[in-house]
Amino acid sequence: MDHYRSKRERMVAEQIAARGIRDSRVLDAMRRVPREEFVRRLSRSSAYEDHPLAIASGQTISQPYIVALTVEAALVDERSHVLDVGTGSGYGAAVLAEIVADVVSIERHPELANGAREVLERLGYSTVSVVTGDGTLGWPDAAPYDAIVVAAAAARVPGPWLEQLKDGGRLVMPVGTPGFGQRLQRITLGPGRVPRADDLGGVTFVPLIGAYGIGSPLFEEN
Ligand code: SAM
View 1 (spheres, rainbow, N blue to C red):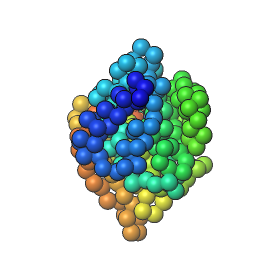
View 2 (view 1 turned 60 degrees about the vertical axis):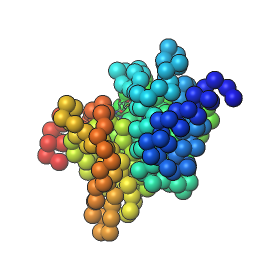
View 3 (view 1 turned 90 degrees about the horizontal axis):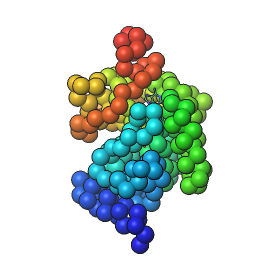
View 4 (view 1 turned 90 degrees about the vertical axis):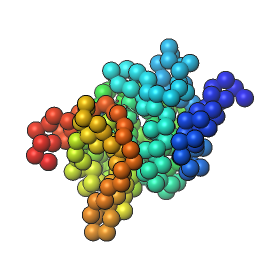
């Protein structure tokens, strides 16, 4: 077994399965995606450690367990069409792509979007489309989605996301403001498209910046 593969196996056993992630599709996806390809060269030896790591543009690649928790909570399968908000390194999009039919992944920093597109293409993740833009507006061109997963925190749910979910669709996002605590929530569009929230625990994410993000006047009115 190669060096990184054995690190991946250990990560899944000790950080992910041990914390209660049970969905075999998620565990298998985490076993397959070469996380070392999504981090800076200097961070490769730390790629499977139990914490986020710095990437370009002052952003982070999320802790592996949080990626697994988010993807499991989105209740996706091989037919799912998913919007991933906050591409960052592209790692989360790759984990999703191991499970679902296709992924649109949106990132506001062009440098990160370009880097993620390059590594995803190189690794053969042909079902992921990386786009650059303000993910708080969703990506209406490819809507509606079975699930929207978000890797940056907002104090409230951007309206466009609920509009772009299918009936029964799931939105998994960190809700809260920096410094005041954030909770990972799953919001499900139930009968009559009435949203219902499930709390998945405390998390720490970078802020969602954009028209419906932290600090925006639109968001205050929203
Ligand atoms: N899923 C990523 C990964 O696997 O590396 C995690 C990236 S990081 C925790 C969150 C990302 O959200 C950052 O790259 C940040 O630039 C991005 N972001 C913040 N606000 C955004 C917005 N309105 N639209 C798109 N991306 C946004």
